[in-house]
Length: 72
Image (cartoon, rainbow, N blue to C red; front, side, top):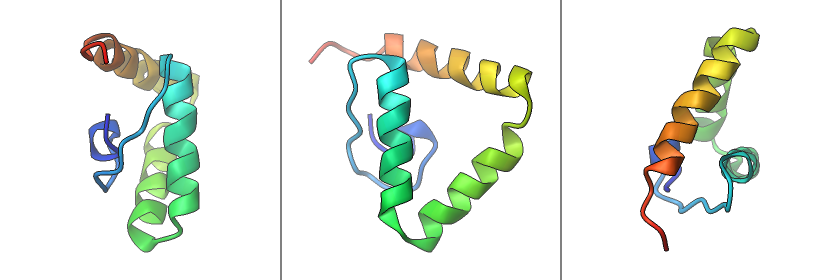
């Protein structure tokens, strides 16, 4: 998946064997990008996904997307 497909801002490919690994790699990418677009998007995501129920919903929605990916 790309950063954009993970609700990010660019076309960098993010890889991972599990949904959790993909999310970890996505977060590392966004933190290392060091530009305003990524910083602003991360801030927006943190503000939007507050509380355990919001985080759980986000992860469940992402898992559905991940499970639908074609095998490499």
